[in-house]
Length: 148
Image 1: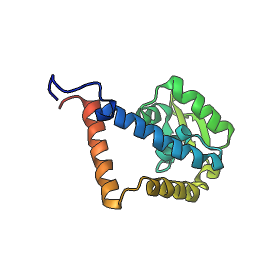
Image 2: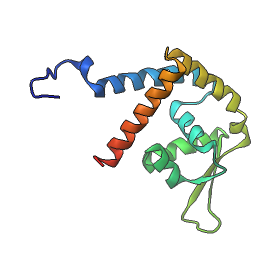
Image 3: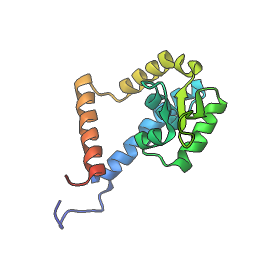
Image 4: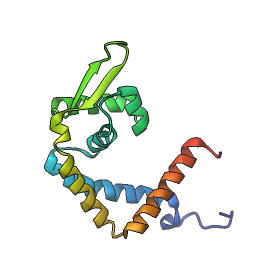
């Protein structure tokens, strides 16, 4: 970008394209997740915990880029809904462990269906979808790790 570029063109800004696209995809998920009484942030927790038996709350927060002030109330609501178990680690009581319940794991087929619906709603072919995902992952990694 040069100093002569017109910075007033909102639609030409990468930040706005990412922001507005994130809003649109979150809205799409929100409408579909509603049938499971699950919010989008709860869905992200579900995804982060699915391959794990249990993780520390700290590790979960790092994985989702969420601080404890945001994550704790979210986990509390999920526990009240019967989707997760939270408990102190028997070996180190400073650690709080979290894992999905059987009730939550039973939602996997429905979550998979929702993911497919959202993927189809993007209008992207599989190859385009994978390329965009790779580009966004690379961008995220670069921005979070600095200019390595």
